[in-house]
Amino acid sequence: MIRRLIATALLLAMMSSILSKLFVYAEFKSNQAFIASSLCENRERPELNCEGKCYLMKKLKEAEDKEKKQENQAQKKAAVDLFFLNEKVASVFVFTIPERKKPSIQKFTLPEFNAEIPHPPSYNC
Image (cartoon, rainbow, N blue to C red):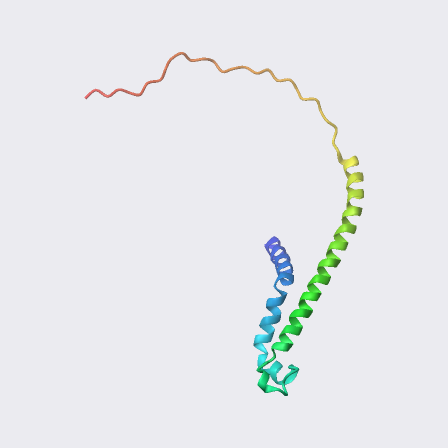
């Protein structure tokens, strides 16, 4: 049960970065009337029919920039972690390699040979 919860949490964490644009769009759709009346840059010019789309585009751009920044940080961190990880793994493997044992010699024998050929049963009617 706990493994499922951990797996679900990790899956949601990975999916949140992938679906960040979907979350921004869902927030926009749920609050579109408020955004169009209060936050829209073009609310004084109704002839543009913006209806808050300028705000949506700004938020999508921010989400994309944030995603790129996180991706760059993750790549840098992975490169640093990989560098230190190689050093640690090498020292761990040196101490944890078990000694090799010589294989024991086993005598191989074939099963006894049976010369009788099996036949299907015959039915006399």
